[in-house]
Length: 204
Image (cartoon, rainbow, N blue to C red; front, top):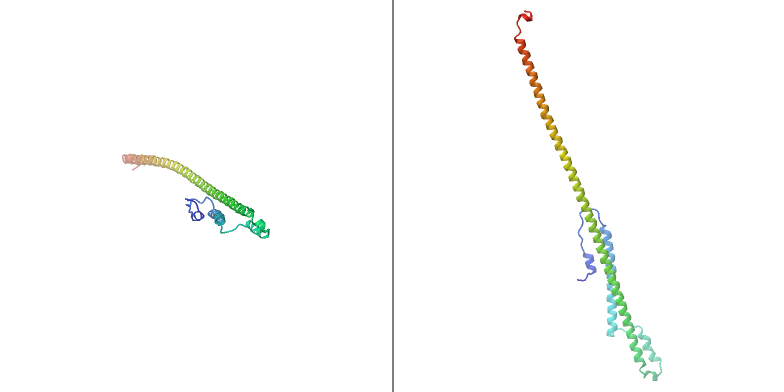
């Protein structure tokens, strides 16, 4: 299916999820310029085709035939009987038609070049936007992996610290219990020794 200016105007692109990318307004302005030039070329092409059709059908007379039509009026009657006017009348008909065909061919070639250039620039813009989006996504994924690795390392470090603190607490409680039990035993021993001392020994 042939691409038309309306296809360019109504074309919708998907928006990327990141802020980086081309300015949508600049892209729209450039596409608008392409559409204007494209429509102008199509209008010129249609006008040239209409003129050529008019020349071929005989509805319009090329400007080159005007001098040839006036020539028999100024010539002598004897010259009018010769077949020369017939030859001179058919020659100008071919020249404008050939010129019109050349102009149409040139216009068509320019139109094709404009269309090809517009498509190439469009494809380039899309390719660059896709490449930039892929680069941004890859960079974001890389940063995500690095952040996950950092958090995993911190988690491992914290878990090791928690284990050390738990061991320290267990050892501290054990040592504290042993110290308290030892102090209690010493108190019991001191109380027992005091209870078994004779009364005369304390001066009574």
